[in-house]
Image 1 (tube, helix red, strand yellow):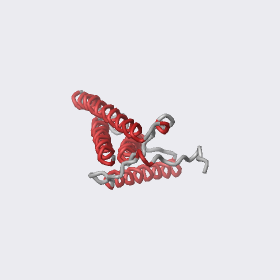
Image 2: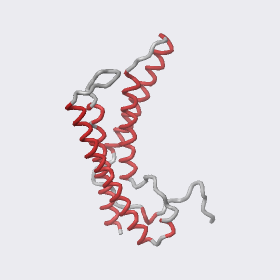
Image 3: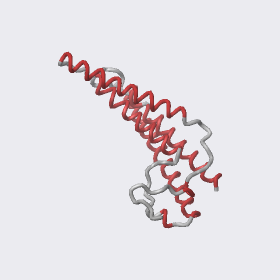
Image 4: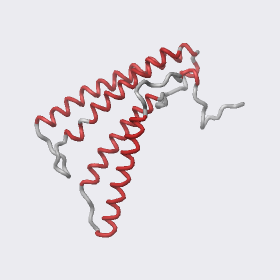
Length: 171
């Protein structure tokens, strides 16, 4: 059977068979809640704009914040399930042992990047807290929005370490 270039079958040898110890239901529920909040806020804003020719200024600020949270939580889910975006053209040409090693190396590099992002964004949050920056539309402290970047980056880094550990155990 000829492989489909549009929908290639996933490489089964690179998938860890051991499930994560921390349940993914946490991220799944958070994703559903954030998407529901985004839909509700957008729907309310559309109704208000349609019937009154006015707009809630705060909806854009909250929506941008929620989309960032959604992207980070979605990234955590993708890494935990080993369904993240990767370039497999060269990896698929390797033997299973090399594929496993490349997967482990990618997990370590990703974890390193997200731990660095957590540290650097924590410094940003501290500066926002220290200098009492406020958000433009609502006027709440800016760090209320920014604190989620280092926290969720740390979660993604930990999920990548978990992926590495499950990959090591499954082989």
